[in-house]
Length: 191
Image (tube, rainbow, N blue to C red):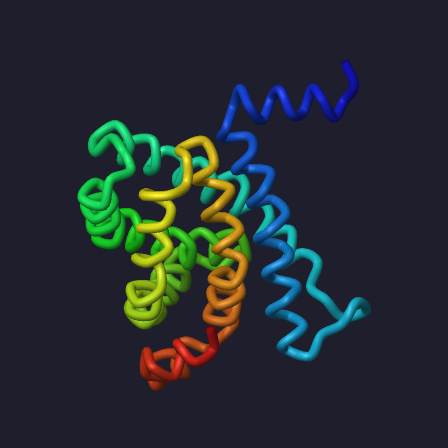
């Protein structure tokens, strides 16, 4: 059995690995896209920033998302509209705030910022980011819960998150003071 077929078997047997692999690729790509919008190029990209995005996306986001999707599927089985609405509502009110706070806090710590700076970044950026996310992600979640088979939900969300992660990378690079001045409508135009 070749390496590729062993990988396919592992991805089928352990769907979390497929999610981790997709996030390990998509999140650094999102960072590169965002850095390109900053005017950087192959010679000036911050490769350590890309590495942080890959590490965070694959080792934290994918497992927490996989866990949330597994719990949601057990608590509200099926892919009916009713189950999708319940999962979407619960996700928007629980997992989404958790994920956004974790992103700003965790990425700040990976940047070696002190605890109080990581907390200040969460305080400044969470609410504007959440407002934008609440306008985008419920529709994606409904599609995910009602159309996509459970084994493909993490990879589907990781593909959808390419654009979203570009937005998160943009927000991450913004000064805290500028974020507070921007309205959610202005931030949504970036997407």
